[in-house]
Image (cartoon, rainbow, N blue to C red; front, side):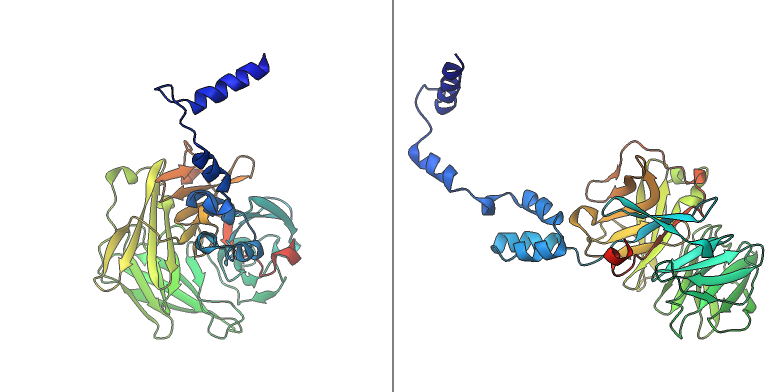
Length: 376
């Protein structure tokens, strides 16, 4: 009985509506000649994106189509890791969004400190009880101490790796809408340098870091969207006469100031505005016209946003490109919240993104070690 059913189904497939046979010997031969090189481009890219860099390179020499697919998704860069700071104890966790894996790390050296900023695998930390400010690399365990300084409501960043002679630590705090106090320091210094500056335009420093170092100067986004600039060499401060980015009115709701992030990429200043389940809006400062322009694509760049510092990357796995990754992880630590500009949607869908619920010192994006296998 089963054999009759199979023969009947085969006959239905091979027979057209006019009752004539439509499956010719030529068509059968064409099907037999189909091979791996005939796979759809989307499927080829999906397969290539799951390969290691070495296997991706090997696969790219098979044929021209495979080469194009392999190069389009080839990973030559490592995504930042999300570092979690425990409320108690010394056990820290590092989440790799590209592999969706979490790695534990014991760091008793950080006891009693809170994180302020990250860059080039270095953390800038502060101990409120002792006012100790210091750099720490969690992968090499190197520590560089700075002079004691009271960090209250200042936002803070540093220009480059603290092992560089050009490293500058920068903090800014508004005294009044027209006056700010700026303090700077560098590794090896014996004290901080603090000066007050007058603003021509109102500048109220943001509660959390909206601060990047780009093209030799620090850019700082105010609470209301004005852009302050500090040149550490000239020790000049000013607020640019650039109107703040325009956002829909529904973005200005409870905790709206926490849903703003700032990053830089190849000399460009980027600002990300988010609001609950609304799609994020990305602005880039056109430095020739000094106007904020809304971006509809990141051109395969990936942004990693957190309260205290944000990063940009290129040449990540294909599925991560043209997206933003936020400092929230769902599904028991297995899925990082992201937004795809290609699909115009969040992943996972139907989540509430109220940034007021999250402790800004809970986690931060950090550069992973160069040799990940050695660390793991």
